[in-house]
Image (tube, rainbow, N blue to C red; front, side):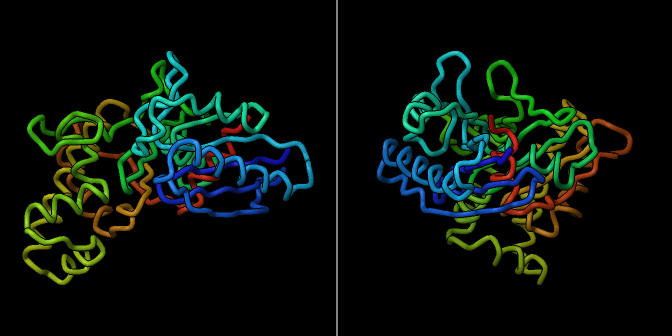
Length: 294
């Protein structure tokens, strides 16, 4: 069976075809063009799906989509997406009607976690928690090779645990969410607020390693927030491994100073949870979408 997966992002849509042996056969990226609205995004998804199906000459396929947010089990509508034009829409039903087949839609962090659990850094582990720290901040739980979503489809949503009820406002309507502090987008906003000027995170990281006092101060602030947030999660879930993804996972010091902060705040005498970088890189989300497909 061939597996088609599509990863729907805010700026790009990526599709892949995996062969029966799990190897990548076809991959393509197109712009999301979300500024043109919900119906346009659906048409982009259909176009990419049809192109991927054609690439395997009509062979039987499964199909899965990874997207920010989740389908509400109660209403069937998408919720919690930071591509806000998708929220409140019957995405699954509309796409199934448009494409003419059943599909599986999963949260993008669940897809990331699934791919890393089966093919990447979490391979062979029973309980894997996958984290995305990119534009936003999400998480997914994989237990014994299966995604765990919970009855409300919110399992793993650590990005919306509040670290400070008086903190910055979040798009979800709450304040002080983890996402507002440790996602790439959140970090850039916090830096500009604190120092009065915007600065790319790669530049901040380089300045940190060069010993620039302002960058050191900011990165130490970030490590503390990261440590508190992830320690809370580990205290609740106690996973076999935590796999980091997204642009912030490329910060080298996350795996030294960041992990030291987790160790400081975790409710245990000795933190033994491996906290590691992903192995699949940008492929994880779209591979996971293919793996969860029906």
